[in-house]
Length: 460
Image (cartoon, rainbow, N blue to C red; front, side, top):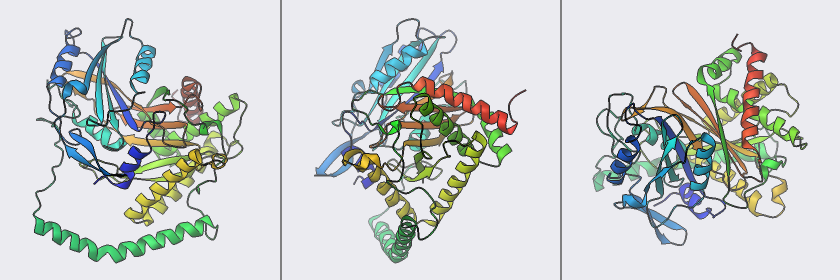
């Protein structure tokens, strides 16, 4: 049976609000294979076999009730090859992936598609994959993407994200073969813990209620308390604007170390600062701190299971007129409170809480009047990728990019992910919310330079 969070992505999906994720890995083609690498890869992918969750198709059991069934995907309906016209610039590339990302995934098949995009300048090639958010969450998707890449230039396997990892790759953990009696024993043991879990959830509900009523200090922002900004203008069509920027991971870590904060705090600070400057350029300055809806992973280190294993929080960012160093201190204080709150909550409570917050975002989008009292102004999410140089059949990875999705109630999603020596910040926005995503990434770059200067970590 599909769980409530995964099911919500299916039920809330609309043509103007798709709930699939898209990621692209860009490779430099091996020397001597500039003309042959793309066709060889396409042929290998068309003749490959898919494993879970890529061989699972949606099956409805009734109204608002569904499950996954295992099938054998017809690869010619999932894998496509596209050649960009010369000169194959990144502007052409983004125009193409924006077009490819518009359409909804076909629910009569497993909910994913792959595009091999050849013809990028400097003898490069990209693999773009679209996967429905109900099938796998963002961090799980990043782990799947890591599984098909190798840390050896000499590994010549033409692997894919949906294929069973071969030799040299870390295998996905298989579910153990459990007998019916063992399943029953496990269920009984789980029932014995139920009173303790219910008591914990009751305490979490009481704590949340007391914070909402200001009977005790708030550990995070409350639903429907954010101030509306242009970033709350939601999509009227499937059209999206995308842009990204790569920062040196070592420089971001140095800023975090110098200020006794975290890498996430530093990135959130430069995002927040750039958003306020963007609003000032539009002559619509924010009157209060922006609030970010932030998913947080509950996934274990193996990343073996599909679906979504996340909680979420509402984080009030820095005051509008704060200096960038003051903004970092404020954000660090708020994220510390949110982490302390999350550690005290039961896992089940955190998942229910995430659904409540996501529901409050959707209500602000759908219920007349609530749009003026949104729960958040944007979505910010982060993922940790591999630190080593990776390859596909000898082709080195030169970039990993994502196309963030826009959940109900959000016109702007900013996602950052580390890979090798680069931290990439990707913007996905409705045109109604951000008309110029490229301007926003330039402001992010400027904000990081000012932060480095303010804390004394700028390169000489």
